[in-house]
Length: 267
Ligand SMILES: *C/C=C(C)/C=C/C=C(C)/C=C/C1=C(C)CCCC1(C)C
Image 1: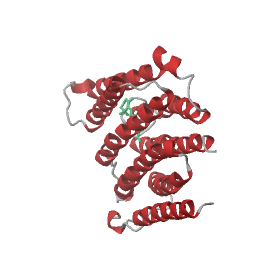
Image 2 (image 1 turned 30 degrees about the vertical axis):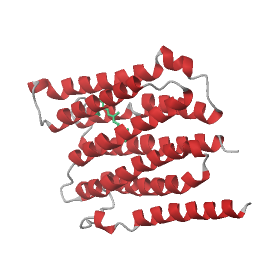
Image 3 (image 1 turned 120 degrees about the vertical axis):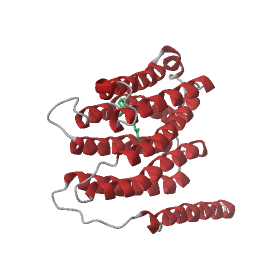
Image 4 (image 1 turned 90 degrees about the vertical axis):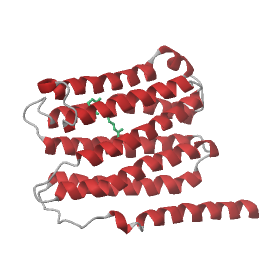
């Protein structure tokens, strides 16, 4: 290897390493620690999700150095998604394990309101790589995802009960419409035509993205129904476990797919 290349490689490694260390060394984000009870499954699921988000963030930042240049931005966005989630999980798990165990609804929705738009940026980057990205597409996906989340927040929090007794259900339906639009946009004809182009890695990322948004995202409305008395036999605890699993699938596993796609294009 050329000397200059070696130095460049070392520089990027040092950069990745120090980013990772800076994250771990951020002690201010852990509030006063509660004791996690041995049978507190909700608390345990929050704890696991917190650790996984941190691990994924470090992984994506460090691995960013090892992927072809055109994939670096996607890796950065994947790390931002899990990094922002990790930050919020450190608070959510505190709320969850507190005496009487609360549901960290506001932190949850603030997190989604930041991480979902970041994922839309990720989708856009992937669509751009297959030649199916337009500004209108980006704007519509962004708008639909915000409608979906704001509706979910009003439905779950009761902060704006304009629909009276039916508020929980009607806001859910509005949220479903937002998600439905996103599915339509990702599966409709134009996109399908464009999707035949691109490298193996781009193809893999594109297919993964569509399935993640279709199957992975479907877990959320199900969790909402469980936690908000739309299906019987479940409660808010079940909902929180389901949401935590969904976040791991849609943030960590999706990021891993992007990373895997990037490695396919190496060499
Ligand atoms: C990282 C966080 C992600 C990917 C969050 C995604 C959230 C959803 C796909 C939420 C969807 C909802 C509906 C489709 C209807 C009911 C309300 C929501 C917000 C739970």
